[in-house]
Every structure is written in structure tokens, then in C-alpha cells.
Image (tube, rainbow, N blue to C red):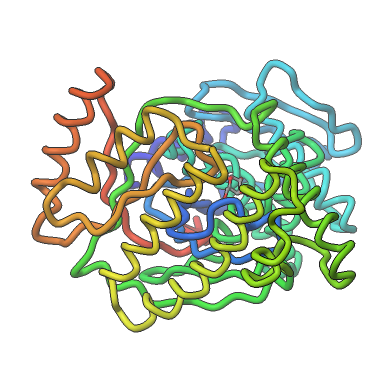
Length: 389
Ligand code: GLA
């Protein structure tokens, strides 16, 4: 991080001839449990991790926002009163969307300069988009000094993603990027936005994220199709149980009783979501009691269900899961995020981590010819101030 902080200061002073007033971070995330449950009003259990977007900023008086991305080496500028979609610098749409929806929410913003520099791999399933949204949202909050709860800022980020960028994701990514906590996982009820922290002691067991290097885009992908299939399932259940508003309201018993009356594909999607919600609730308990072995079994079951019933895996994810599960000291291997590529997440006993990294790199390459990126992650705080200048 120190190098990136220095880089932000240097970029900022070169472009804006001053120092940033404050530098904040918005972290990436990995979901330990809860695959495709968030947009079904269900439960998730993610952690914020030690890869993030850093954002340094200062106010300006002309009602303009200028944002520099150190990763893309591009500066964009837009007016607070006329925020348009940018077809060229598409990364800036996350910032534009957050600014737009903060103002829609009634926040009076002043102009600002921002310099960003991140190390969240893009398109890998660690939610670089939520990281940039929460870094910029939090930076604007710090600079303008307005009050806003963490869940509210997360919702603003989700609106930016859904309605400005045009990707119809759930609330998990922004919520954990804003509200994550060091050495803890966050259990979230995606309907009520009630949450609690579950201690995650990473001294005995490490979170290892394995990037398959298979990239996937959420825009135009099958993600929307899965959402529609879930909505159809919820509509069908509402005929039999009027209280059903989303698949969150369908119990295992209700599913068993009616599954033969559902279209085949819808039945599979419902089975996954209903089972996964149940597993997330159970995982919160077992993690709370420090039972990593059982937690690992639930992670594996989550992956298998996402593969077989939700059908969001791909050959690269399967190769990585096979290799990571077989490695000594590994307690689990499951896909992270939406699937279709990107990363897997494993829990690995501390004393085996070095060996795990070596074996996985070799064995995965043998199976796929791809060279994976492997990250030993810690659970970190969500969006927060790194330095005030
Ligand atoms: C993506 C979305 C999340 C969630 C996951 C699947 O990461 O951004 O909202 O739906 O997929 O669990």
C-alpha cells in the first residue's frame, strides 16, 4: 500500500498542483458463502480483503469533478450538473454513477479532484467495481462532510451499478466494501440489511483467493437470465403461498412439496437458492464456533450446488476447484462472486499455505495451460480513511 499512496500523492500533485486533503480506500471482497442469494433477498457471508482502490481527493470551487485513474493513466472531467455516461473511459462510469445518485439522494456536493490507484484485479470476481464505488463515495463523504450511514452509501453504490453502469447486481459487493471489518466476516440479510460480524481468526486458517485468469463480464452475461429464472420461481411460489415475495421466503419443505410443478430449469435454480440460504445460516453458526472443517464442507457444498443446480461454473473454475481441494491442508475450494470465470476461494491451514501456493500454481497450469494469480488474503475494514494530509 505505501507505494500506491506515494503514487496517488505524486499523480495528484502533478495534475492538480496541490496535495490531496485525504486518502481513503475501498476494498475488494470475497464471498465465503452465499452464491447468488443476494438478489433473492437472501443471506450472504463475505469478507472485505486486502486488495483495494485508494482514492485521494480535494475540493474545488467550479462544480466540476476531475478523476484521474493511475491504473488507466487517464483523466476525465465532468460537471456536477450534467453527468453523462462515458463510452470511452468506462471505468469512470462507476464514479459518475455514485456522484449522480448521491445528488439524487439530496446530497449537496461541491466539485472535487480525485486520484485513484487500485490493485483489485479487474474482471476476476473480487468486485473492483464496488471497490471504486465505495472508495469514491466515501471520499466524497469525507470531503463534503455529509452524514450518511454505511448501508445507505452501499445502496447508492448499488444504484450506480444497476442504473448508471447498467449491471443488475445485488447489494452484497457494495455492502461489504463499505462495512467490512478487520478479522471478521459479515453476515448480511439482504432483505432487511441487518448485519452482524462473525469473528474470523486467520492465524490458524488463511483465505486464499485463486484467480483462474479466465475473465468474464457481467454485462450481457447469463447473470440476468439467472435473475429472471429466480423471479419466475418466486412468482410461481406466490400462487401457492401469497406471502412469498422472493425465493428467500421459500423453505426447503415448500420446495419439496411443489418442485414437480416447476419448469425443470426453474426448479434447479430454486433448489440452489433455497439450499444456499440454509447453508449460509448454518455457516454463520459454525464459523462463530470456530469449526473451520465444517465451514469448509459448507463452502464445498455451496460450489457444487452453484455448478450443478445454478450452472454458473466453467472448465477453468472446475480445474481450480479440483486442484485447490486436493492440495494438502486445504479445507475448501469454491467459486467466488458470480461464477463463469474469475476467482475461487479456499480456506487453507496456516502451516500448509506455502505448499498450497506452489502445488496449485503447478497443477492448475498443467490442467489449463493458464498461469494463475494467487492471493493470501486477510479480512480487512471496509471503506475508511488511510491518511489525512
Ligand atoms: C456478483 C454480484 C453480486 C452477487 C454475486 C453472486 O458478484 O455483483 O451482487 O449477486 O455475483 O453471488
